[in-house]
Amino acid sequence: MTGSIDGPGAAGPARPPIPTREQARAADRVFGDRRELADRYVGHLATSGIERGLLGPREVPRLWDRHVLNCAVVEELIPAGVRVADVGSGAGLPGLALAIARPDLRIDLIEPLERRVAWLDEVIEDLGLDHVRVHRDRAETAASTIDVDVVTSRAVSALTTLVPWSMPLLHGSGRMLAIKGRSAGEEIVKAEKAIRRAGGVRPVVLTAGDGLLPVPTTVVAIDAAPAGTRR
Image (cartoon, rainbow, N blue to C red; front, side, top):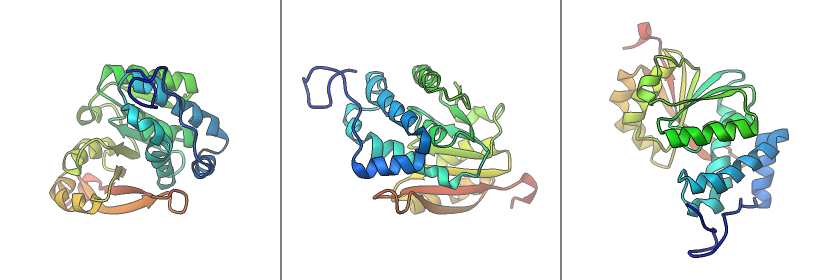
């Protein structure tokens, strides 16, 4: 998929969006001395990411606020030095955004589609993210080989489906962090039985990026309970 973001029929490849002053300030805060890597990642999203269909061309002007910063601020909810699994990574959101912001994390990206896995591998190599691995696998079967402290996701599925996929990756200890929209609270209510069956406890709606982003990121957090303590 090629073409400019300036409109239908315009020639030339899409160009990475220039962040606004507010977005640049937020990016500097979140990424620190790794800001240049974040710029390069946005460049990949705006070019090869669009060309290979990982994102739609209309998303290019919104890459910084709606996608990269929206995901990266979730790093404030993740403890230092833990292992993270990102379910349904797609274009690396939130997994690669978190990897750039937090080099102390070990991150496993779980993605079933080969073309997306190939793109993720290319971006990881180009950015030198040696603390990130990509697994071509489905979330519901990945728990046999992956054991992490935190599971992240964004725009993958409703909680009723997402919880049974995510919680097994924690093996009874850790936290699931799912980026959601305004209906997060309603999703928790609908998923009460699924959460309980999967060994989840204390579901709560949190926000990340307060005071940094115009619209903070909404996150559903669910803790994992050891098998012996479940009811």
